[in-house]
Structures are given as C-alpha cells and as structure tokens.
Amino acid sequence: MNEKRSQILEQLNRFSPNLIDRIRTLSEKDWSAQSRCSDWTVKDVMSHLTTVLATYLQIIETAKNTEDIRNNPKISYSEPGTLDGKSVASRLSQRAKETSGNFKSNNELVVEFGLRFKELLDGFNSCEEHHWDLKAYHPVNWVSIYGMLLWTLFESSIHAWDALNAVDEKYIIDENLAPLLPQYFCNELINRWFKTPDSPESPSQTLAVNFGGSHGVRIASSKGNLDIDQCAINSFDADAEIHTSPSEFALLITGRKDLVKSMEDSSTQLKGDSSHIVSFSRWFTGS
Image (tube, rainbow, N blue to C red; front, top):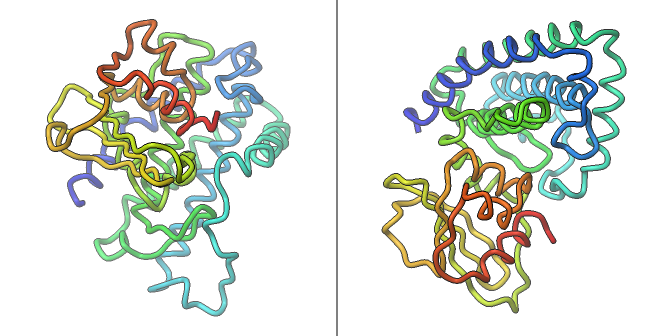
C-alpha cells in the first residue's frame, strides 16, 4: 500500500504543474470547444474539476481532524451508497455549467484551478501514516483518505483527457497515471460508481485485460455480480482476453471509447469469446 500510495503522489505532483501549464496555453476558441463529455465545453470540464478538487480537500481535512467521522455527533451525513454516475449525471452537468459561468475570464479559472490542485496535493503530501486509513465521506461510499487519493487520480487524469483531447486528438490519458488507474477501477468501495451488473440470469463470464506486463485486470460476471480485480495475468482462466494499453483501457472502462471502435483502429485486440464485446459495453455504459 505504501509503495502504491507513493507512486500515485509522485505522479500527481508531477502531473499537476504540467496540466496547469498546458491549459494556460488554451485559446479562447479552445475553451469554448465541445469537450469529450457530450454536454460540456472544455471550460465546463475544467470548472467541474476545480470544484471537485476543492471538495476533496474539504473531505480529507475533515477526516484528518477526527478518528472516525462516523462517530462525530457534530457532523451529519446522508448515508452514502445510493448514488452512481448515471443517477447524478444531469445534476453534475448543470452544476458544472453554472460554475463555469461564474468565472469572468478563462485566466481566472486557470488561476483558481492551479490553486485548488496545489492545496489538495499539499493536503495529501502532509498526511501522516495513520491518516491514510481514516474514514472519509464520499457520496458514493465511506472510503478512506487513501480512497480520496484514488478519486483524485481518476478525476484529474480522466477529465484532463476530456478537455485536452477535444483540442488535440494526440493527447492521451497520461502514460504515467494510466498504469495506476486500475487501483481505482478495482476498488470495490468505488467501482459501483461506473459499472452496471448483469441480471442474475445472465451466464457467467470472465474477461482478462492484458497490458503486456505481468499483472492485468480480471472482470468476472456471475449471478448478477460484477467483480473487477487486479491479479497476475496468468493466474486465472478467462473466456476472452483484451490486449490494450493502460491509457486506452481507461477510455474503454469509462465509456469514453467504444470497444469495437478501439478494435477497429487496432488500439485493442480481443482473443477468445467475441460475445464479450457486447458484455463489456453493457457492463460499462449500461447499454
């Protein structure tokens, strides 16, 4: 855990200033361009991310200040675990647009975004060893401060792509952050946010995701349960096996790119049972 946490922090500390420098060079036309999020402009995406980072700082600072915030009578939270990405999509979209309109200039947004990202990373960088397992509240679930680090990894890397790929098609999910993202995708307290389980009557299926190294991701559907785990790529049998890069997989599992299209442009290869093409889409886009 310590090694994984250190890797994420190291890469986010590198990624943050690079991202800020990149968005600082965007033109007025770029800011108003349609992002890879269908309902948001590039400015809307960055406004949303700015709000998210500020909220996460508040979450981890609250968690740091008490041993278990669930036992603090002065803090009241609605029980998490009832929300997922689909149920709050329209609400998040509207809020991002409202926030975007509050910035008088794009430069003001860049400054605010840089400040929020730095403050959040300072909050993580100053964590002591005992802080990381403290309970932290996210509307999706009771996680930990380490869980909030995973959320930060996900939100910053994915939304950076949403914004920057819209104005530069060569921009991919950061190659240093992408290999770390399976820790987010496989976290059972988090991944209910984006996955759609099969019906209990659906046949059991197991899919391996091979990134070309010793470890990959196992996706197993059985009796209506959809489990996502990291494991040694040769440690289990699978009905089919996806071969792709960590950056491409991040787009596939978040529904930002269709598996068929990824196979057509040779970014992904599928070996074994081709029915997994339909299953994968159903699991991660709900279609």
